[in-house]
Length: 177
Image 1 (cartoon, one colour):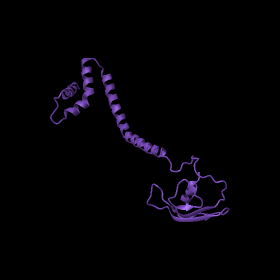
Image 2 (tube, rainbow, N blue to C red):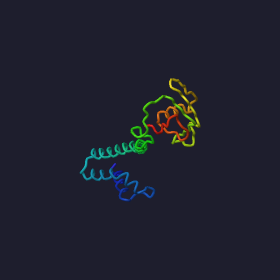
Image 3 (cartoon, rainbow, N blue to C red):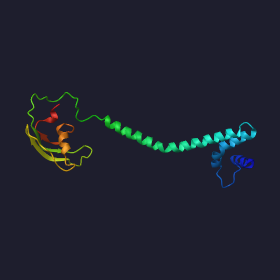
Image 4 (tube, rainbow, N blue to C red):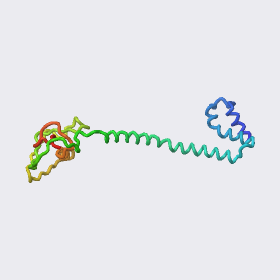
């Protein structure tokens, strides 16, 4: 055992065989070598040496478990930045604005004439392409169609969640507050 410890000390001092990398050996055996020297001088007990080596191995193991989580933390931070940039965007339609035309009496007629609409995230895809709709007061209308044909978009335009880019509504709804 003492012979092996002396070999470690000699390896660390640069007297390693040619096929061993001196830096790797030094880094690998630095703590055990220093502890061995202190143990041989009587300044450290073998139990303390074992405790130090155990702590180093345990810390390396914990670090090895923590490193893969760094990528997850970085991805979460980037995603949060993108989410906050969306939250901080100023909307095209300010629902809290008091400007615009105020109507004294609304008759309840809804009218779309040649309305065209595309979402800003997909400007090349027309969701509504020249749709016309006329609903009189007291009438009930069912808007039916396959998924993605624009049913919810029509309702969103009526509630002014979005503005259309071509066509008109019965009133100049874009001027209303």
